[in-house]
Amino acid sequence: MTATAPSTAISTAIRHDWTLQEARDLFELPFNDLLFRAQSVHREHFDPNEVQVSTLLSIKTGACPEDCKYCPQSGHYNTGLEKEKLLEIEKVVAEAKAAKGKGASRFCMGAAWRSPSKKDMPYVLDMVKQVKSLGLETCMTLGMLKENQAKELADAGLDYYNHNLDTSEKFYSHIITTRTYKDRLDTLDNVRKAGMKVCCGGILGMGEDEDDRVGLLLQLANLPQHPESVPVNMLVKVKGTPMENVEDLDPFDFVRIIAVARIMMPASHVRLSAGRENMNEQMQALCFMAGANSIFYGEKLLTTANPEADADMELFRRLGIRPEQREQCASEEQEEEAITEAVEYEATRHMFYDATRESAAS
Ligand code: SF4
Image 1 (cartoon, rainbow, N blue to C red):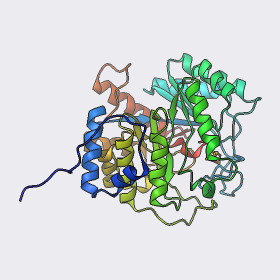
Image 2: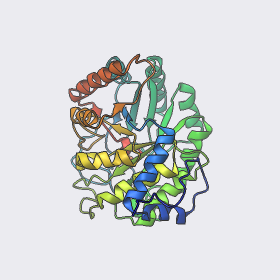
Image 3: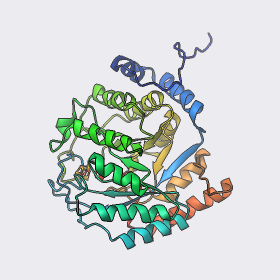
């Protein structure tokens, strides 16, 4: 008897008309068939052995007025998190310069806000301008944006904006009551209208069902333009949040969602984000196989532990994965060296939080 390939032809086209049934059907495929398809799609759009590596600086931590049930930064829960005011611009610029000197090409800044206030906007805009003037790509997550705020940020030079949908529209009110799904979609629309790139994903393992998981992907994949970056987080259960005792997600379901995201948004970077510290190396490798091609590195996410940076690089070496090339690096060796230096730097700088900005004003 001969082995057979999955029966349906593999389409790698970019589509915006996915149906819930199609998404469900993908999720329900036998695991090997699903991974084969995802890997096939992945290879059409990306180098399968490259993974983008990002870093993040929390510019304002804790005391957020929103009530996201997973988030230790929410002022509604007592998680013992130390609150911080907005960092001074000089400090942010100094960190950005240092990061650039160590090889970073994109600098992500996150603040735990419902939305930026009128008072804070000038500081934030100045941060963007000054970081941008260093020749770095800029990314921010500041909560909801009005049309004029998005435009101001874009005019200041902001390249990317992170704003997560978190879960399906149906399940959203179980997770957050201080804003609506439509509020999120409106901000995404404002970001696009202003001409910025979008980073938008969600969190798995919050007690949602399978339809909520594929429902999130359906929402993202049917946006008029796919987010350039799709962070997929595994819930980090933080003591003191309402989700500290929620049931664990089946790790294979997590890998399946990565694979379905890859198939439905073939040209987006799918980011393996928060929760990586709870994944063993084999599971991370499966996620890369399923089409994940971006990670945050370093000792922390915004507020949750993350695998050590050197462990990440060691895993890359063992898997033959290279950090995604950046323009200013003339060779693969230089690139790897720059990343390794940046990783070492991160390990000594607690202000940098490696990994998912998804728990910041996302
Ligand atoms: S996820 Fe973002 S918006 Fe929600 S509580 Fe945390 S910091 Fe605030």
